[in-house]
Amino acid sequence: MPMFKAPFNGYSVKFSPFYESRLAVATAQNFGILGNGRIHVLELSPGGPGVTESIAFDTADAVYDVCWSESHDSVLIAAIGDGSVKIYDTALPPPSNPIRSFQEHAREVHSVDYNPTRRDSFLTASWDDTVKLWAMDRPASIRTFKEHAYCVYQAVWNPKHGDVFASASGDCTLRIWDVREPGSTMIIPAHDLEILSCDWNKYDDCVLATSSVDKTIKVWDVRSYRAPLAVLNGHGYAVRKVKFSPHRRNLIASCSYDMSVCLWDYMVEDALVGRYDHHTEFAVGIDMSVLVEGLMASTGWDELVYVWQQGMDPRAC
Image (tube, rainbow, N blue to C red):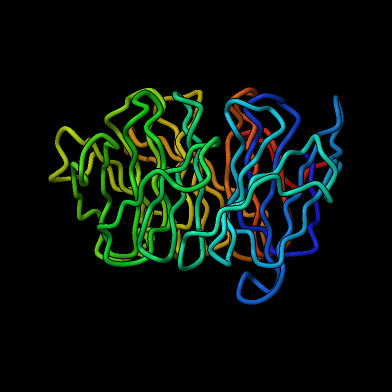
């Protein structure tokens, strides 16, 4: 399976929604604590196990997350450690990039998510305890959502409702928002320790998952959230990222500081259906291809990016 060695520590990996062989990787020097960052755009070799870098963009600070535009096939957005949000056009050479840079967040920007239904706006989540809403054609953010009492690690759009999103925070709450409303519409005290990630089910717009420092993943139904639908135990350390499959209703992927990537079917009793131990450092980035069913990618602090088919060994050539 394809593997790419980056010069810096991996933080995030995202498949292109337009090209099945393309993905972007966010990386940071010195584990993201101090130093530069780099965004890699990779191409999978047709019919073979190889992966090549098509273009890379250097940044003066760590890159913690990246996402592709849903409206322009060559555009991606990066969340930067200096509090900036930068937009890149991969069709242009590095000296012509970034094409836009926004400097509003007071601390590190930890996640970025493009609206999959409206396709004209995106969210950023920051360690300054806020989420910001942006549009590609606006010179400044449209709105700041400030309710969380600690770092917001991730904000993700609902896959069906273009005005609704969820945010996961170190204040141990999951919040549901509607951009048409003045404040959050729901507050779920989802874990007793920091919540590091959240994601919506792609087939049921009322179901979402959270992952936490408490080593668990919990699945929630916003129509009845006093208790989780499922609690998934199996990781040995904090669960850094959780992601619902774009192809299978019940399937969730996760990655953890225990260096593993896990697959779960939250509707069955023995929920852990796959475990991959290919990383040798913290596994912090995970994605599943929308265009190729079963195609997965992960990255971690071992500076490696793996792309593999579900059920296969990520290290197999």
